Length: 189
Ligand SMILES: C[S@@+](CC[C@H](N)C(=O)[O-])C[C@H]1O[C@@H](n2cnc3c(N)ncnc32)[C@H](O)[C@@H]1O
Image 1 (tube, helix red, strand yellow):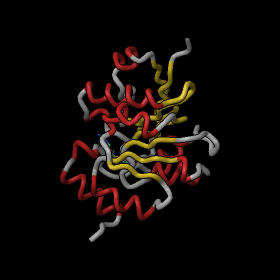
Image 2 (cartoon, rainbow, N blue to C red; image 1 turned 135 degrees about the vertical axis):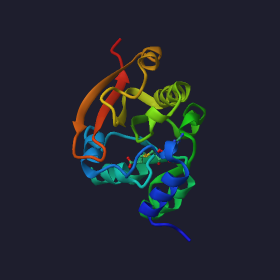
Image 3 (cartoon, helix red, strand yellow; image 1 turned 30 degrees about the vertical axis):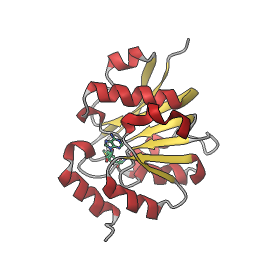
Image 4 (cartoon, helix red, strand yellow; image 1 turned 90 degrees about the vertical axis):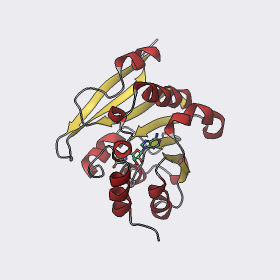
């Protein structure tokens, strides 16, 4: 039987705490900050680690057409609830580490919104995801990442290797736990 989204979240959290990396789904304030720079006419947007779909709902609420949104989620428990809640959005059960290999299938994107728990991942995995993500991002595209820490969760040597910069958009104190949002983009030439 299919689980409701919150039941799926807590069942996944109990089974795979490091993969989920959060004690509850993100709140609405964090979702608004994460999606605040993405205009409805931006073009294609990729969301990594949507979980119960808090950022997905915020992107659609901003007016992004469902056909422009693709979700990449590894945890099988989230797939059916996401499909039921967002029937017109493309949902891939995939490891975000494989983004570089999906370049032809996915095509160019204007933005990536990531709920991935980078602080729980080895640096080489973060490197594969960020490198793969930027291989899909158009020239002016941005990768939005939140973290419960104060510093960006993408290590500085990974940023340097790909010629990237991370700018903090803000911190949401009224989230559980409080979280900072970073915009990661290519450094100007
Ligand atoms: C912190 S939860 C965030 C969920 C949601 N975006 C939110 O903010 O409430 C992390 C999500 O990333 C997913 N995830 C973890 N590792 C992944 C990977 N390698 N590829 C794709 N999704 C992954 C988890 O299954 C989970 O849905």
